[in-house]
Image 1: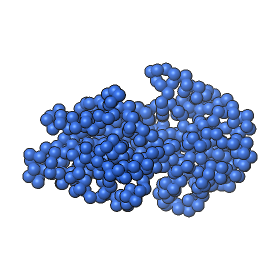
Image 2 (image 1 turned 90 degrees about the horizontal axis):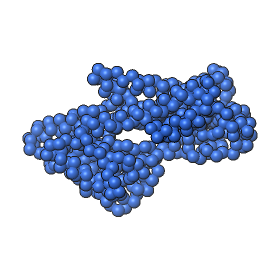
Image 3 (image 1 turned 30 degrees about the horizontal axis):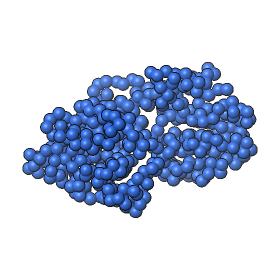
Image 4 (image 1 turned 135 degrees about the vertical axis):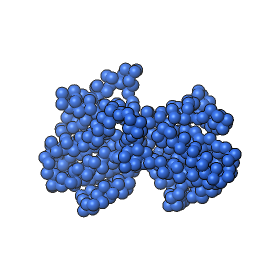
Length: 454
């Protein structure tokens, strides 16, 4: 099948590469020439395990191509995926300008039936807006009889495991209309996703608005679990309980399960923060106050500063002359994504109090410095207080403490004796609860996790 992917960012690249892997002929479009040049030269502009190898394999097989040619992209695919960004607007709502621009370009160049699939995370009612825009553009061109269908097919990809998630999905959600065009489009999508349903049916068909809401509901639920556990962890710190024992105790209940119950420094990334805001905004537009979601967001914003509070309690407000080693910068492991990363809040708070930061991340150091340059755009001199190093242990010598922000596997089994020897003071602020407090105590560390006690 000939497929067009509009937008060669995170979702677009993963979707395009995986569909090409299944034998489809995929045209990936992006208006960013620099990004297309990287892809055409054999590179990948994002870090995602397994993605580069898949892209290279399918480029060599002639099943995937990358271009800025909008007309050619519309002509290529009967199925047009819209996978562009929907960043938060000033009021927290999803900014749909890129989605609507993509729809307008499809209408501008289409001369035959198209199935337009909203893959981007978009508010309820977006498919209807896209449909009205395309219809209006076609009518202006005099193509009143040219038909099309707009489908909602939200992505459920976890950064760091996106290729696996796409190729072995828990579910595929498809929202479509029940008119003649919608039924034809639904059948086309059924054929497209047939390889994923050979073992058992994974596709859930529903109306368009329900599909759009499903994506937001899923991310909001996961964000809620994270914030709930973070609040319980803060309570555990006060009353002397161990949040890890609590996690196991409640996670063993089949009604709850273990997923997304880990306490830490708060969630970040490109999805949870903006999707919680966008869902709240949709509710507000409809005169409904989603109080739980407001609380989820408030808790998360506070949680990003929890390690800073522990550090200030240990060393005082004035951190001049202090140096802190930091392991992990990306908002989660197996990605270089720095969007809404807790590390940015922690670094900002510490350097403004006079501290020096020596940091290591296996893949995100370059992206982290780009993000930090934006954070300190009005105070560029503070960037001089931040140093990136290539190996974890290079951050340690003479540091007053180690701060762990991202749970990369490479951080899980350090040489604790060497760590203690090289740190100026044997203190670890563990924002991801990687270690057992009793083990660190035996090694002579002052270990401060999130809701952890011996």
